[in-house]
Length: 304
Image (cartoon, rainbow, N blue to C red):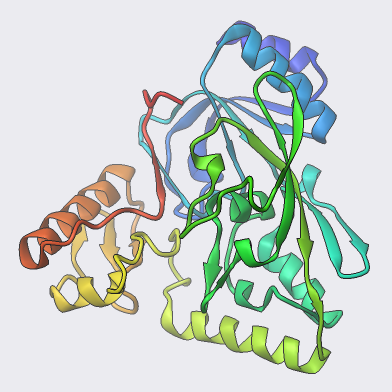
C-alpha cells in the first residue's frame, strides 16, 4: 500500500492521507483507519486516482459524509475515496439541477427551496451528500430520489464515465443498481418543479422540525439503522420489543427513536454491531421478522 500511497501523491489528485481514522469521516464518530484516504479535486482527478487503484488492484470504496456507514474498529483495507467539498458544485438549467456528488444533500435542498423549487422537500434534515443519496435512493415522507433523478454521471474502475438514466439506475426501496455494480457517482441531474416559495420552504421546515423533535441528533449517530420491514416500521417493532434504551459499551438504542443507535460515550463499532445483532435476534424470536440494516457495515477484510 505504501507504493500506492506514493503514486496517488504523485498523481496530483488532491489530499492523500495515510492511515486516516475513519472516525473523522463518519457521523457516528466511529471507525478505525483507512490504509489510504483521498479527496479528489474533481472528476479528472478522480479518474487519475482510479487508474492508480486499478493498476495495483487494491480494494477501494467511495464515501461522502459518512452518514450511513459503520466502519469496523480495525478500519478499512485499501483506498477510501472521499467525495467532499472539492466536488461540491451546483448548476441550474431552468428546473433541472446539476449537482456534484460531494454537495451536501440538506444544503442543496435548503438552497433550492428558497428559490421556490419543489421536489426536494423530503430532504429536510437528511444528512449526507448528493452522491450518497443517489447511491442508496434516500427518501422520507413518501418521496425519494427516484422521483427526481434524471440521470447520474458515474465512473467505472476501467476509467469510463457513463451517464445512467433513472431507469438504468434501477431504483427501489433504499437501493439502486450502484449497490451491485462497482462505480462512483460523480454528479447527478435532478428535475424539480416550480412551486410557491413560501409553501416549499414551510414544507421543508416542517420535515426538518419533525426530525429534530423525534430523532436524537444531539448524539453522534447514522440515522435509521434498520430498513422498515414493510408493512411494519422498524422503530415501532424495536420499541414494542422493549429495546429502547438498551446499551452495550458506549452505544445505546435511543430513548427518543428506537431505530437510532447513538454514540453515547466513545462507542466502538463492536458496540454498535453487538446492539444490531441483539435487535435482529430479538425481533426474529418475537415476531419472526428478519431485520435488515439500512446502514452499510464496512468490515476490514470485506471483498470490496
